[in-house]
Image 1 (cartoon, helix red, strand yellow):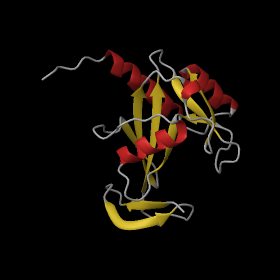
Image 2 (tube, rainbow, N blue to C red):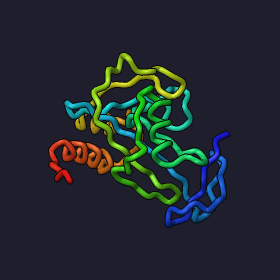
Image 3 (cartoon, rainbow, N blue to C red):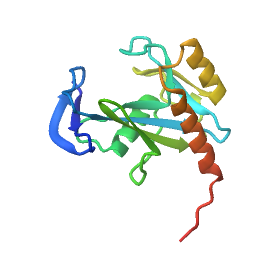
Image 4 (cartoon, rainbow, N blue to C red):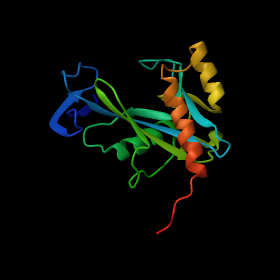
Length: 175
């Protein structure tokens, strides 16, 4: 049984919890995280969900994602989901989400990570992920068009690729 913390519309914890699978009360929110890993060639690591998963079984998806469990910060949930689904260890302790998408019942935090990963060395397949591969933005859009990628807005994929590309070309002043 998975337990989630409940948040109000201002993203403050209410002190209440929720059992996954039950309907959230009106006006309640929970926290969801996504991690998109990119290589230096500009490709995103995508995963194929196991064929027996509830929800979008067998479909391709962003590198990792899932709901934060009770007591998790966004950063802890991102690290946990990435490790559980791929075996990639990352520390998000001093990282804020690159962007957040709010839905009617969730705050969806997106983290972007640039790391050249040897996919043959990943902990895949596992109970959640059937396989992984590197994909370009165009390949992901082709998969979205043919229905083999989870339903996600085009703008979300564009934003992930645009932000990771911009991040590699931006120069920051050192203090």
